[in-house]
Image 1: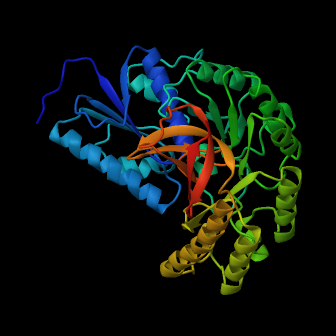
Image 2: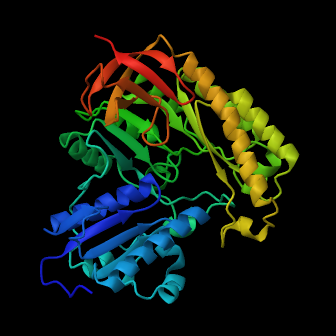
Length: 437
């Protein structure tokens, strides 16, 4: 066993879960750096003696991954390769008493709103003046911008309000300041995130002001793309569509998790919408911004989902032709209002339904991609893998969407640069292109 070190502490921050957790880890690391502390992100090196695990507690698979990660680092602590293990994030917020009982070797657990307490435990002071100061972990040319925390929606399946609390918007002024600092550090693309973009501004301005925020952010020098993630369909502010259509910097893209389309399931989910209202909103999207890419996510296997409900969902996916789509299998979460319902769709049926939806989407994506052959696009280059440079169009978000592959044996492009390309081949989820000289 390694004896306790008398060297200066080095802190390894490990992030699990969604982009909102990535953002929170970056803020934590920025605070630590401002305190002159040595901090790294997800390093494999063995020279760090303190580990902070930022956990996810959203659904069963995410919770299992978080618990396993905690156990891994507790084992390292017992072996002496690390000295202290701290846990924060959604799992810790939601299950702190249980975790303290079941995994007592963790030095301390913290919730999602306890950053000052976590910093104090790490020997650092919380610096209120650090508006927008973060140690970004994404590639230098793009960054997530969290515009609000928490959620006021009553969705019956969702545990996020239990872990993140009520919706709290950041001010437009603070978000512009944060974006200016990011741009000075080389960020060209802002990816706006929140539990609910649609609600932005209602709490502090008494009206929805997402459109006003976009107009303020597009004036930040150095920012060339602004992308919208996680809008909610009910109460969607229509003026946002005008901004997307008219402002070149705002990507023709929106991520709007719709979850389902069958009216009985939407009602049981407490989504506050219907088949007809959802389709009317999608019609508005495509009428006002004809070339906008629409990304959605769905849940299959919700309690009471019948074969008829699933057929309605399948036909809708086939007819609507979403540009991007992902599927979750329903997870029965404690303390949500859906937890009182019987989780009556067998696991194997949930898995089969998810596969059916993705098979339909694969065909839709192939047809949409095939239509792009011969067209030219502006592409942002993210990285190089093997013999290809990997980039994205404005219709694609990193990690979750389609990519553009450029043959690195024939062409050279730089990471973080915008490049004009022409597509010469398409597959189900990717495009092959060459630079236009």
